[in-house]
Length: 244
Length: 242
Image 1 (cartoon, rainbow over the protein chains, first blue to last red):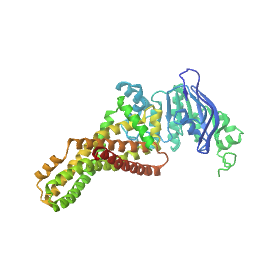
Image 2 (cartoon, each protein chain N blue to C red):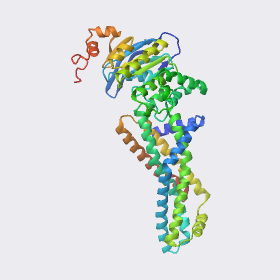
Image 3 (cartoon, rainbow over the protein chains, first blue to last red):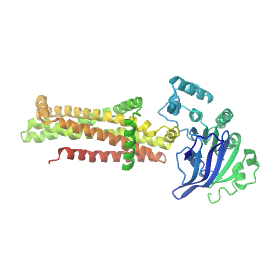
Image 4 (cartoon, rainbow over the protein chains, first blue to last red):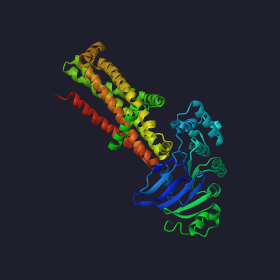
């Protein structure tokens, strides 16, 4: 992956990326760009390659062909399962993300307090992840992802498994963060409320390709058979052909 | 697996040479290893000492070699049984725990989270455990040897009516400084095998809950097998007739 510190508008460039796991081709030449300050919703059925793309952007996976260019090293990722280190407290989880900056204890504490306050978890600073609810874990993961004020923030199913109220709270944080920072964001999600509320632009993926692109408003009115089926949750349509 | 172990060991040693050591975590791991292994090492060493002393006393008394009991028992304990007992117990108690913990961290994406935060999993997870293993294994090994020796003295007195002073005289005449060198060498090798195999298995396993159990079993099998192989290699390099 090429990483450059250019200060241009485009922060993430995915160019004809292909990836296979064994004989299963997950990505089949997908391309798109994400600009600074933009929130792209990456939506589609399970197994269409959304999370694989996030792993490539964070350098956890390499593409078989094509290029993934990330124009910043400051990348934050909110994991689907929170991925908090269970042996560390909430404070220590955030401090770990700050470690490479070699800050003074005072500065480190100040940043941790600020980020936990942003997600409303200041009272849980000394709690262990296993002492937190699913929603609190997700909010801690969110705080950890933004603790270094990343220029790119990736959300992998940020509201999956949460109740509607907690989903709305997380979505509000995402919108608020988008308004307060100029970070480029990719939101991978199935949740209707999440992609309609948080994304400014939608990319619908199916079978390793992008099959539709537009705004959430356009998505709801689209005649594209894939988008119509996904947006309205219809059983009939091209999306599940050969799958059920 | 062996290739992965060599790569992880090389990276861990490089981190240690570069001074990238989280001493606080290393001390915590020392406490965990000691705390987890102390009772089980005590019990196994005690009964190994009992059994060896009983067998050897019985045979040597029959040939009138009572005064050699201490020497023979201590040779076995210092050269072979001390390091092996501690190594095998540490494999079962600590190696399995590390393999299960790291596999769970892999499956729940905690290792991926470390990489995204640009925290090196080798430096953060492997190095403190390796430092703790290198320190605690010789300690436990010497402790196992001592417990075994005390147990042997007691049984020799009961079974062969051998006074402790006679037993210890025989020990002093038989054990050489070199034997302690071999003892520590084996302990260091066992620590490396326990920590590196358990970490390599943990950091290279993917899947679900079932894989945690399979990974733990795989780690234990590799560690136990290699402990016995390396034990023989060190013994043959040191004590084989020339």
